[in-house]
Length: 274
Image (cartoon, rainbow, N blue to C red; front, side):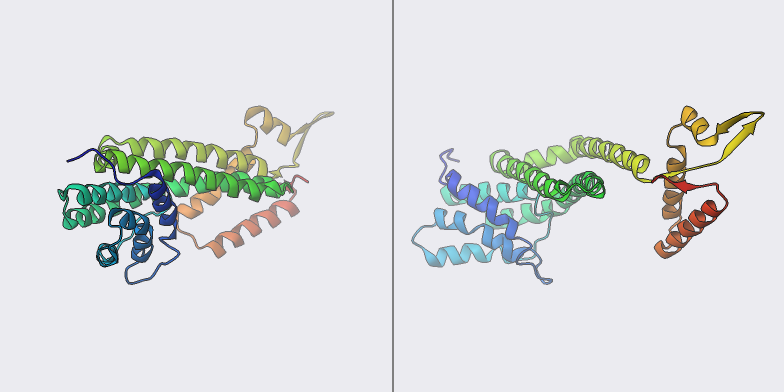
C-alpha cells in the first residue's frame, strides 16, 4: 500500500466540520446516515474528481443505518473511515464491505465512550455555570457555552486525526487497556467535587437551636461547625440521594422536602441562611 496521501488538510477539516451535521439531518429510520453521507462529500469529491456517477455511488454507501456519539469520540470513526476510503481509492486493497464492517462494529463501543465523556463534561460545566448564575453573574451561561464548545472541538478534532492516522487500533487499545475507565473515573471524581462544593454552598440551611448552660448560651450550629462544617446541608443532600436511590417519585420527594422545611422552620429546628 502506498504511503502517498491524496487528501489534503482542507478536505479533512471540511469532513470533520460537516460531521457535526450528523444529527441535524437525523431521522428515525437510519438515524445519522444522511449526516454521515454529507460529511463524506469533500472526501469523495477529492478521491474521484470529474466522475459524478462514481461520487454518487460512493456516497450511497453511507445512506445505511448509523448511530454513535457524534460530537466527541464519534469523530474517531469518521477519521478511520476517511483513511480507509483513501487507501481504497489509491490501491484498492480495502473493500467497501470492510469499511462498512468497521463502522458498524465501532459505533456501539464508541457511543458508550463518547456519551459517558459528554455527560460528565456537560454536568461539571453546567454545575459551575449554574452556581455563577445563582449569584447573578451573567457570565455563567456564556462561559458554559464557550468552554463546552472549546472542549468539544479539541476532543473531536484530536479523535478525528488520531482515527485518520492510526486507524481502528487506537480505539481498540482504548477499550482493551481500560484507558476510558480511568478517564471516566477522573472526570467523575472532579464532578463529585463540584457537586459536593455546590451542596455545601447552595443548600443554605442551618439550625438556630441554642443550648443554655448556666449563663452561657451555646449555639448548636457553631458547635456543629467546629466538628463538621456544613453537616446539615450534607445530611439533607444525602437524604435526597437516598430517596433517588429508592426510586421515590420526584413529586413525592419535593413534597417530603417541603414538609421537612415547614416543620423544621416552625419548630425552630431549621432555618435558611439569608
